[in-house]
Image (tube, rainbow, N blue to C red; front, side):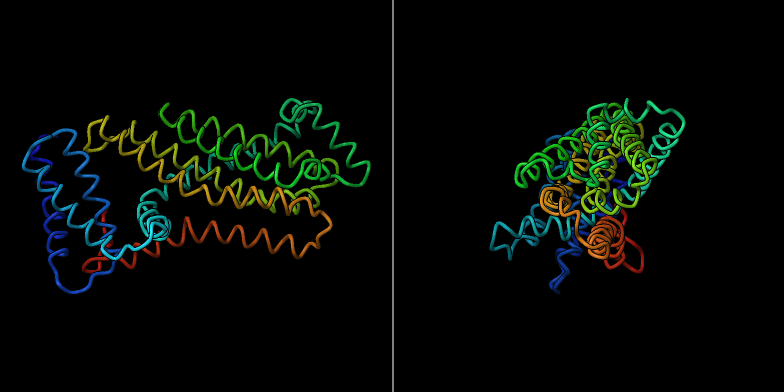
Length: 326
């Protein structure tokens, strides 16, 4: 894009932001933050394609002023993390609700494929889950403790191992987005088919409820956040396939940064899921109402943070009755 066209496309937004910063009245920090994210994106683009230009100098000054306003009252390093999770990330993630929905649909479709394949072909479950796991689980079912697999490792070892593995899967789903999103779809497919076959195996053995009320204690967050990591990969893939007004390289760099922020947002949830799997899931004797409560709170937390809160926060930050455009 020519510099003149770039300036023309964004001039009104920059002027509005500059006027907002020069306003002596108090401004909601989240309002400044939302526009600051846009300006820093524009600054990155300008530095790449118009280095040393007046446009780059202007945007650099605008971003510096905004940064000073945002962080003037910052007294503790912890505020950086609080601001990221409470404001910066939700404001940004509002843009990617469609990719989140697409990731969910892809995952759900492949769960159905896993269930259908397991019900149609008897050896499919063994091919997916492995003979050793199937034989061990059948033995546990015979011993009237079908979820005994969650009691084999020590609590701390399981917590650490599961958390690291889940983060590894999330990073794979994100990084493989560089294959135009195809790699991300493959990671989602692998995990979804495995889940579908896994649940059908317990259904076939009359243990669907027992498995579901136990597995989804940690699985609600674990699976949800894998889907969110899939969203991050799809964001990267979209940036390659549909650069819009940016060059493909600039769009890709922007997509990688946004995808990384999405993955970073999942880490606390993966830690919670790992804790639940290591310390809570093994308590198979807990009453159904407690298991259902944990599952319900987990699902509600995911929906509130990744769906409701970004929409709610963006609705609050409107200008002249219109939502801010990112």
